[in-house]
Image 1 (cartoon, rainbow, N blue to C red):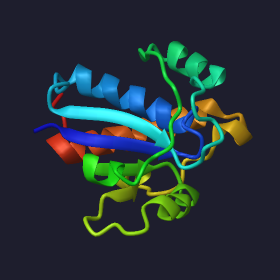
Image 2 (cartoon, one colour):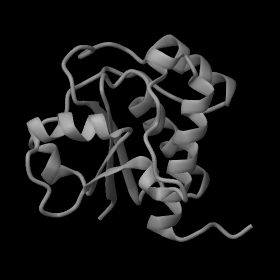
Image 3 (cartoon, one colour):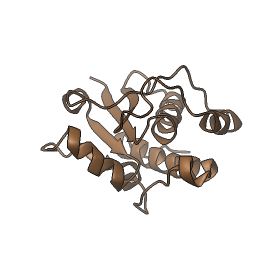
Length: 155
């Protein structure tokens, strides 16, 4: 049974979708694609149906991270049962998520950077304009998550 991971941000056009494709790439590089299902969603309805934000695509292109077509969607209450982990980019996302999924009896809802040595929020590049910082933070969290799930990769 694969582990199902859902990345969450406000609009699902920057951070969460970047995390989706960054994590998919890391999983593929470790030969684990049959063991992990990865998706992303928003807490808001603002960007539903929209593609990934062009500066986010440019950052993934610059880092040679493959990505495919994307249509932003809002998380649904049913996603709680469908996914093993629901990883938010910042505390604000968790607060908004609580309107849709008020309870977390299985402890599935966390911050992505809870899987780093320095847990913190990932700043929203929609506002900061700093897609490099967001990328680096997402990579840090995704590496920590992958190591937590499958153990550190030996070099």
